[in-house]
Figure 1: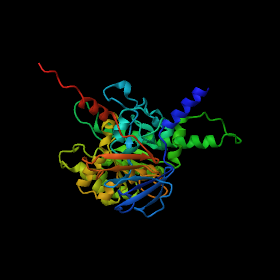
Figure 2: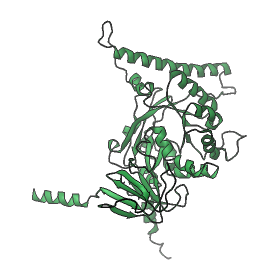
Figure 3: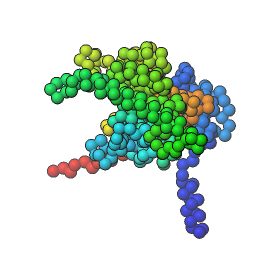
Figure 4: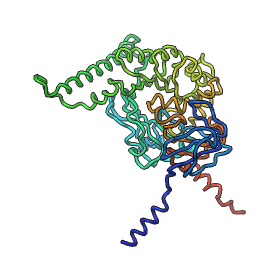
Length: 430
């Protein structure tokens, strides 16, 4: 027993300790919600931000001082659509756990299946991403997403908010032509039927909820439990939004009409043509998660820079827009490029502050967690990154990261491979 106790003491002593009170000083602080602070200071106590100001403007008693002179301090970046932890190698099916079978999977909570040991998570983290909203794939109603920190042992420990909303793919409006294509009238009818089926589904979900609420009352019969109908409850109560994946302007307008008729909160995901209906999105106060900023133009008449300019046009219209790389398959292997997508949007007209907000505060607003994260403000959690320069510039690495005030190791598989092959023995001379 003495030996076991000694081992326990030594083990606990070797574990990293969480600083109760910490002062990050000397950096240029970018709160996002306000102007940058030269020679700034941020004080963190038990994982929460308790002071933001200039260096030396608050009591440092009992705090560990972290000198960040020459650095920039930002809130952690948020991947607002991602499937990090559900994918590993896109070409190896056994490592892919994104899509579920079937048309309607509202009861699915994909974030509960995240692999915390995925090699893609540290790679994304080393480029400043502290949180990811994990989104399921699928054909029609995809399931619920959840916001997770990219540090921790289990999904429960990583959980920040969930479910953040229900995701679905909106029916396509594209008409096929050619010898194998059905008649145009039939395609239009099928599209209208798909939307009507969704409306009928919500009607049944509402009726189910009324029947369950009436259980036990005189004359009320027994209603079998239906998990699919129950999963629509938070959306019908407007507690969380319905995230509609749609790119075509006609899809987006159809989704707007549907959400207004059903009295639902709506967020557009993908949003390739969102700028074409930006005024209507702004009027309806519908947020947009803009994906694939660097994708090729979808139409011959669009300029090569059209993808980079969409964020600016949404911002000018007053739409709350977040930028995301995307989710599923190889998108997770390039999730680390998130800040550079925002950087390209900035290079094509999106203001500096809006570009930074598109990967920090705006995702937090859309996901409903802006009271806890997304900016450097008193009372919010200390999710922070320190860089050697502008975080949206590809040449400026992330030097340090804190999640809930705890410093996170930024080494990843790329670092290990670099070190391994850098020290590879030289070939023997012939």
